[in-house]
Image (cartoon, rainbow, N blue to C red; front, side, top):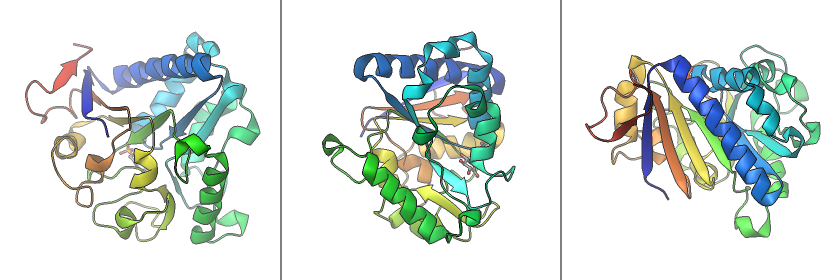
Length: 257
Ligand SMILES: O=C1O[C@H](COP(=O)(O)O)[C@@H](O)[C@H](O)[C@H]1O
C-alpha cells in the first residue's frame, strides 16, 4: 500500500477544479497506455463539485468517455432518480453531459429494483467479479482512480467508524444503521478500496480538519475509516486549506497559495 501524499489548495472551489484537471489528465494517460480506464465515483460536496468542474472544462473532450468504466464507491439505498442518490448527483453534474457507453456505467441498484440491500450488494459484487481480470488477482477490478469524499467523522464510501462493514472481506456490502441519512446504503469495503491503483481522498471545510489529521496518522481503520483508504500505487489527500489546518507542519504541499 502507498504512503499518502497531501496536496493543499486555496479553497473548495479551486480544489474541485484542480481535482477535475487531475482526473482528466489521469484518464487520458491511462487510456493512451491501455485503451480504456476506470474510475470510482463518490457522492458528497467536493465529489459532485469535481464532476461539475469536469463538465465545465473544454479539456473534458480529451477523454474518450466511451472507453471509461464508471463505478461507485457507495450508494444511498434509495430509488433510482432520488435526489439523494450519489448516482443522481453524478448524472446531473457530469454523466448526462458526456458520451458514456451505458453498459460501462455500473450503478448500485436501489429498492425500486425489487432487491433488498443485501441482494443489491451481491449483484454489484457479481458485476465487479465479472469485470475483474486474472491479473487483478481478486474479486474486483484494479480501479485506475478511486475518488473518495470523507465525512467529519472520517467515514469514506459508506464505511462509518466502528461499523461491521469495516471487518468485511467481501468487496461490497449492505450497510444498515448508518449515522448519516439515509441509514441503508451499499458500500465497497476496504479490500476493494485498497485494490485500486490510485485512491484520492478529497475533502474541504474546517469541520473535516480533525478527521484529515487522524486519516493521515497511524489510527486503525475501524476507528478512522479514512486511515484505511490507501491505493496500491498512489494515495492522494487532495484538500483545501481549511480541512488541512490540523495536519502536521510540512506534511502538506501547498499547490494554490
Ligand atoms: O454520505 C456520503 O458522504 C460522504 C462525504 O460527503 P460530504 O458532503 O461531507 O463531502 C461521501 O463521500 C459519500 O460518498 C456519501 O455517500
